[in-house]
Amino acid sequence: MRGRSLFDLLQKQPKQGLGQKFRRTSWKDDSFWTLTAAKPSLEGQRGKAWGLLTWKGEQQSQRKQVNGSLKKI
Image (tube, rainbow, N blue to C red; front, top):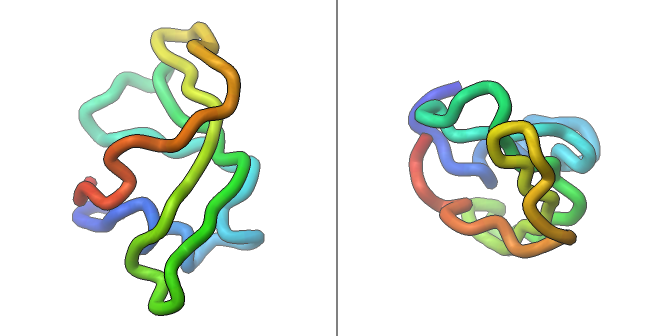
């Protein structure tokens, strides 16, 4: 889906997208976030999300907060 933030997408996913891979449309297929936790706000349009970042095929760090989760894809 295009033109939606991460939290817009999570509302439509089973288990709020936990365990699924998400990437920006400008990223290549080997760069993505694997979602490990999400805490949406009451209205569901914003919140905080955490995951594992894989960049160019290599996991970059331990679990950390997803940056830019409110940016439109």
